[in-house]
Amino acid sequence: MSTTNEARVVEPRTVEHWIGGASTPGGSSRRGPVWNPATGARQADVVLGSAADVDLAVATATKAFTAWQDVPLTRRAKILFAFRELVNAHVDDLARIVTAEHGKVVSDAKGEVQRGLEVVEFACGIPHLLKGEFSDQVSTGVDAYSFRQPLGAVAGITPFNFPVMVPMWMHPIAIACGNTFVLKPSERDPSASTLVAELWQRAGLPDGVFNVVHGDKEAVDAVLDHPGISAVSFVGSTPIARYVHERASRAGKRVQALGGAKNHAVVLPDADLDFAADHITAAAYGSAGQRCMAISAVVAVGEAGDVLVDKLRERAAAIQVGPGVDDAAEMGPVVTRQAQERVAAYVENGTEEGATVVLDGRGLRVAGHEDGFFVGPCLLDRVDPAMKVYQDEVFGPLLVVLRADTLDDAIGLVNASPYGNGTAVFTGSGEAARTFQRSVTVGMIGINVPIPVPMAFYSFGGWKDSLFGDRHVHGSEGVGFYTRAKAVTARWPHIEQVVDATLHFPST
Image (cartoon, rainbow, N blue to C red):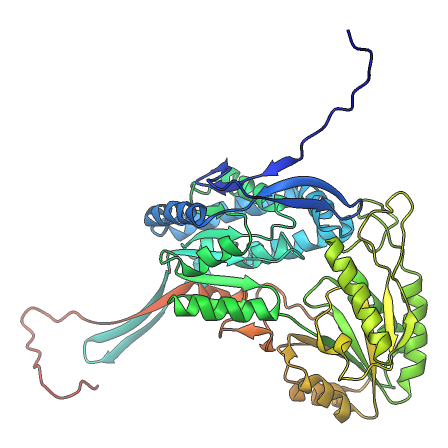
């Protein structure tokens, strides 16, 4: 009998697809790593789906659509209410999954789930949202009316930064409208989607109405090309959003593709600079800057500049960085080693191009988590619009400060950016705020609000290179995206009534 203590090798768990109401490994043998960003350890493998896996999911969704489209609105709403209650009961579970795979602190992950729940709650009102229009007696004995119907099997391709919230921008409304759904979540943090699928099933959603296919570019391309998918929703970087829009449009699909951002906060000298610094710091470094609505560029106007930079440095330096499960941590790691290296490279590049390094978070080591993907808050001042660190979406805890002499100059900077997702102005002047909101070419605007994400009953989306397609997500535009209208003109003449038919163009 051996007395040697042999270390037992524990194989990482495997995250599988969810198709037709059950977990399945699919037909592909390819796997991808799922990291723990706080430790740098490989905690799971995710199956990387093939075109055949996507085809199975679409076939399953298409079959389920036949019955689901005819389910009464009140029954759909009942399922949505049940789903809402189940998600609310599992906020902590979903948050822990997000923290483990994304890295954000638990409180931030809970906030993400709650914002997703707001869209579910909006979708619970689907009987009202799908009410049509009716016009009586548009012509003699003629009525006109319209109503909306679902598209069929639709798909969502979503990013790593909000693995619960962003998919919930899509699937609750799509399903409420009578569609079936195929979700391709990020392969970096895939596990939350499995729990969401299980909660849909427990809520009473028929199998096949909600499906999850994991994968990389092979699965994405299969979704974009598949003739059985009627519409695609996407959130991610601008180059990929453009690619998704072009490829899916060529395949005849309806597409909404939300791209990247370079969100500016313009700070005027009359602003409460302590208030502005507090809120900009939270907006820049929350979730380690990995938000499409994060403030990544500050435009300090006039004499606000030096004072504001000092206040930003003081607040950013005080941020507690650590693993997301640590209650004391305010900011966690970035999602991968590559993301960590990318942020460091942008700080280096900005330095080489002449920016002033106010705070350098490179090389941060967290005790007990030395192999984690941590980057401390970084702050660069005197950044020029020509610098790469300003032109690109960095997607990390890096805030850059530009200077402008006047409000008009600041607006010019905002409008010169190819991105138009979100922006904010900090001021005590109603006149300046009104000038700003009417002049900037940006889709979502905050007045003394740094992250102006609309409530679920409004619609989310930017302008310019931040949106490809003509429909924003959730709200009334989301309902419009996942349905198509029919207009009916009807006459019911009495049997004895004679209605003359003519060859001329019909009129009233």
